[in-house]
Length: 400
Image 1 (cartoon, helix red, strand yellow):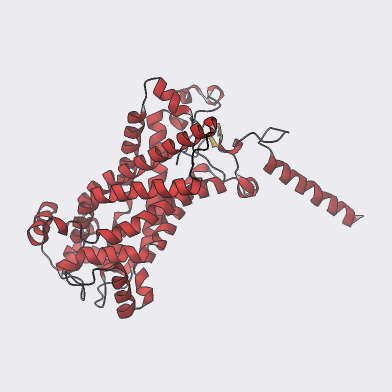
Image 2 (cartoon, rainbow, N blue to C red):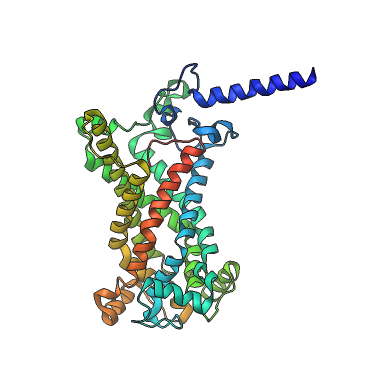
């Protein structure tokens, strides 16, 4: 009897789980198309009152987690995973940016120009593990950086669009909130008919992306500086790890030394991520509209699958943003290494002038090829992973 009772309880629980996974909440029938993309209640990404639909078995069975935690987790894991995948190329980029300064033993101007040759040189002289030198610090930096970056972007967009926690009805209490404040994928057409066109959408994304990037960068900059110095070490060791590097820099250079090069970094990160976010979301919106129109016309037009759209949009956005801001990134890397080599004080303007005088215009793009090879897959992996994780843990903000 006990065995039969236990079996009945197990069968009842399995039926309940299958019912939750096959029907939208509050419904006894089959799910409508894409029911999991609809947010209930306030669509805020702040985690205070955002009730997101569960997506798949993980979202339905996992314990309820605040939306803020989910978004921070998705952004951090996506950024860290992407950086780990492209760490060898990132190290080559840093070494190339610094090779003409004489601060990296064995790397002289004009030598080791090919990516494969550079990879083999590092593996031969320092070992294969050296290709990921400094990646531990990179991951520690990227986890909070990417978390803050994506989370700030989502909330700044909420503020600019008057949605989520920033909806006008929020001050009237929970009882008077709109059932849905998030725009769906077809609301872009309605905005354009109402006088809000693609240009305004792009402007909001530029502002939100640039602001989010600078906030995240300023809060996590010391880790980025340490990462650069650890990656630049070859046969001569100045630091024994993250904690030692932070201690030595703080002792020898003071607190300001941990933020050396912050100004050009913010000047580069702001427009870089502004272009990145704006281009990616704009391309995705245009691709979605094209797919919707092709489906309506049913004329056999070619439509890329979702994973290919993420790849193409992410790659295009990465190339454009990297090209526009690479000179600032190069100057930032060299400023970060100034105290490591000498006690001289060097500023942004003098570093720009020095590069122009010694290396010309080409010097500002030294190492750009491994940078392209890094950012194209890196940005694509980041966006694709972020979208996948959001769906997997049961949160959908209606963008990205």
